[in-house]
Length: 132
Image (tube, helix red, strand yellow):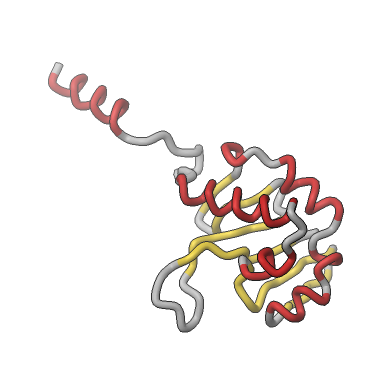
């Protein structure tokens, strides 16, 4: 009986996790919603500020590495394609997939994670890869 009580406590008080053991946090959803708003609002500079540089863009078999926001903005329409835009706009934040790499949007069109960029004092959310 004592063991049953312990199991019930665990079931009631431990937050639900995805099958792979990584639960989405409110902060994950908030970052995604901020990104989505900037994208919908055509705020390209804001979107660029959400990216960790250098960032990899995987286009088929080819990897392009963008070193800074200026390079990102010069290739914005090649990275934020109609497909990527549609995926982000239609993605329900509660259906994001999280694993040890970070949070996947869509079928991997974009990944973001909580990282500590070089020189930063704190961890922050940044986009870490695109696959348009």
